[in-house]
Image 1 (cartoon, helix red, strand yellow):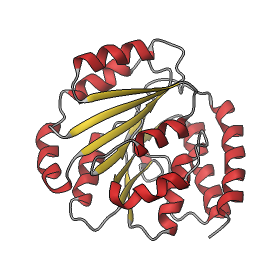
Image 2: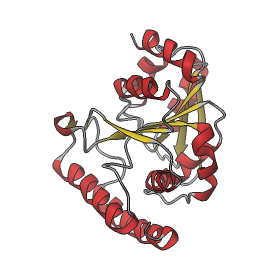
Image 3: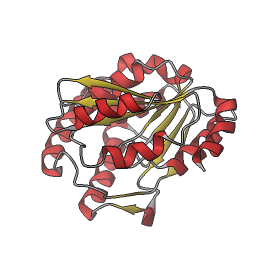
Image 4: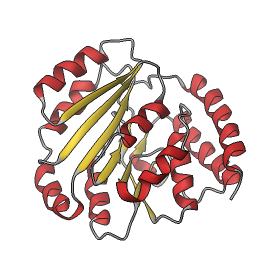
Length: 242
């Protein structure tokens, strides 16, 4: 049971806050969150960052918040994944920060990552969709988009790794100084966070994650790609190549 696995790890790691950005997720909110909230130990909280949803996401979250003491909900008026992530991470005071997407929530990765963090020598554990191999059951085009983005980050920004957009587990004291430096680009905030962490010499370890398509992406790939390319160019201008 997840509760029994997390409790001893938190005795070593301290408090944990999970940040989940959501946009138009009415179809999977309850099915993904409710089983999770019932298995979390004391000191492990979940903050959902709703940003600009136009469906029933807000009303569902408000109902769930009234039912679960370990759930917090923050609404941001404009749709922006990057702004939601930044707001959630900067607003947390937990010892360990976790970032995950609603359609992933790989609890095995959480347990493995917190086990690594418990020894105190690692600043961040990055979940990798590329390392997932056959456990990445997303459509072909989405898998290829991940690999293309990673390649561009390596070429343009000197990124060292296989993924920047998977779930993350971070020691807040190590990464908090980086948050004010990162922009709120809709798609590439996680990439900037990882690259800045690498350039500061933080210890980062990658782990494979397990994921599959459980709903259509809220923002179609053909709309995300041009925006990601724009943000990639802006990020290259801002950071240069290491």
